[in-house]
Length: 120
Image 1 (cartoon, rainbow, N blue to C red):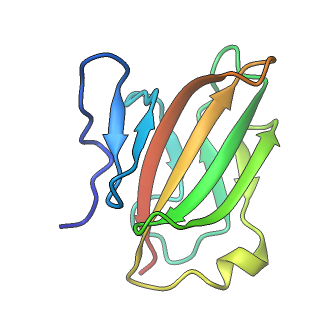
Image 2: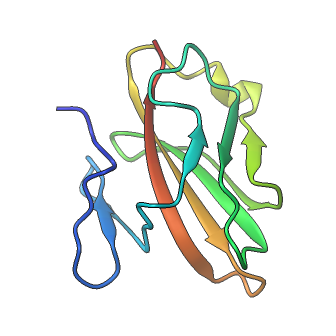
């Protein structure tokens, strides 16, 4: 069964359990991740709705085994371009997870969102 990031356990901070067994805390299921959508033909950009109070964002890209393929902290706009060196390694028909963290001026996490995509 493919990972569905809309399944959120409630009770305290909202969390998402990833397929590798790790847990992402502080998840806001209403925070809108924009691109890539679930089944893009290719991936170049990641974008998300801005969060009030966020000084920057961190983007992390993982495979479903939990391997971190890319991470970039300190993103000030609400979008980021994936470097070619990472894009060329993405495979078709493989699930990938992307996690965005909104960070305040003291570098404390405000909220997170988790998305999934599969290049087709």
